[in-house]
Image 1 (cartoon, helix red, strand yellow):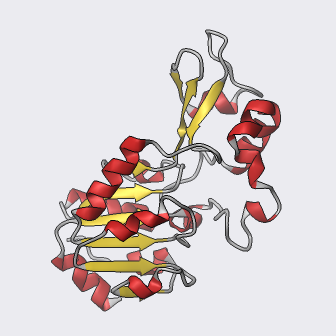
Image 2 (image 1 turned 90 degrees about the vertical axis):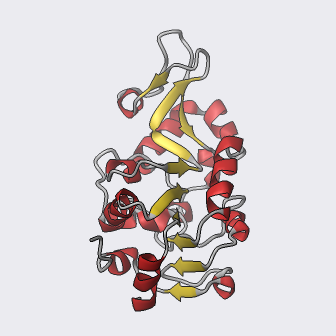
Length: 232
């Protein structure tokens, strides 16, 4: 960890690439861990076709298992925001949909899988906040169109703009921190192959298939790692 902290002090264009493990210490479950919801719930329930064919059942599951309006940023979110304020962290790329990085104060966040905090009418494209979804069995717009969460469901593609922006940030980083992700979800996981900088750091509780390519691997919780980062 001393090496990791020294590299943070040294580098001036850090990019953070985070997965579900970033938010577990805020009480949001890691969907693919041993205790994750996908051990008991099929991924089909958050697929595009299921949303279109069974909106009532989709929203019942979605609101119960994927929306955490009272979750608060943890130490990792807070330290990343401070590093950005200091001009050291240039961008956060996240696979999470909880909006906690922004709640912590981070400004430049690329949300590869969207956000539960944004929802839009599929007919007129008017946007609604999360309360509209939480207060309705099936949320509908004033125009009559059904409202969809602005998240990437299974069978849907990532937004090209988000992919392009993420690849640009990764290619121009001098340090890439990949944390809280098993790197098993594509195409997001494949993005780290575009890194050409000085230090690639992987932080996760368990091994990943990319460990062999990293300059430094830390097997620990993110809270333990980030709580000791000085942000003078």
